[in-house]
Amino acid sequence: MIKVIVHGALGRMGKEVTRFVTESEDMALAALVDIGGDGTEVLTSLDAFTGEADVVIDFSHHTAVPGVLEYAKKRGIPAIIATTGCTEEENAAIREAAEVIPVFASGNMSIGVAVLAAFAAEAARIMKDADIEIVETHHKNKLDAPSGTALLIANEIKTNRPDAQFVLGRSGMRKREKEDIGINSVRCGNIVGIHEVIISTESQTITLKHEAHTRALFAEGAVAAARFICGKGAGLYNIKDMVRK
Image (cartoon, rainbow, N blue to C red; front, side):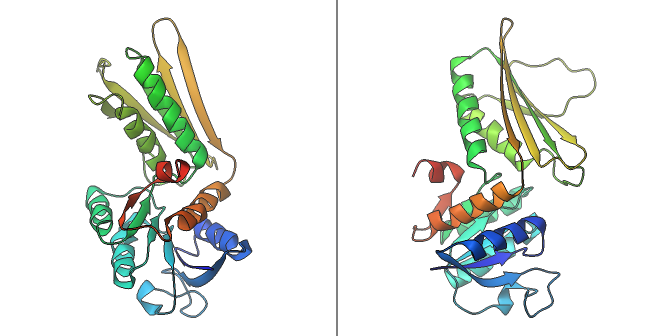
């Protein structure tokens, strides 16, 4: 039985993770933690929990990532970082922690997105002269732009386009450069998440699209990541590793 700490338990994604863990036959809740907790059923800090745990899943806020990693290192347990919008300093903390413990970090926990990114990278490799643009659409309350998923896709494309330069939004008088990968963000309504990759030459266009119908798919992916990472050695893992297992 995998004992799971859910950090950010009162958020939308934290509640979904809690549901998946509770309904799972091979998992159990070790603790629920959230800064807005009551201190009893939902603890207000990770340090308040000293019981048995096998993994911590973080779906809180990117500013909490360093603290989550410090706790996981202290406990010697794997960490699932499902939070988006991490700064370079926070990403550096993820890399440093991965030298000590298993860390699973992904800008998107969807297996479908991993497939989309792989297809986009392969298309970029084959269609060497194609222009590539990414359009990501999310609900109006999403704070980070571009989304972590859009950056995940762009970085996967960059493995086959090493000279690619990311252009975040377009405005003003600037000609499109050959190595540009445009990333454009739309925020409106209650859209869970849509990511489109447009790969276009002068003679043809391929459009790849992934649409999330419910936020539950991200929680489902995070729980799958917890199963995947338990028992692994120290290192930095992501959705591609899980898909290729």
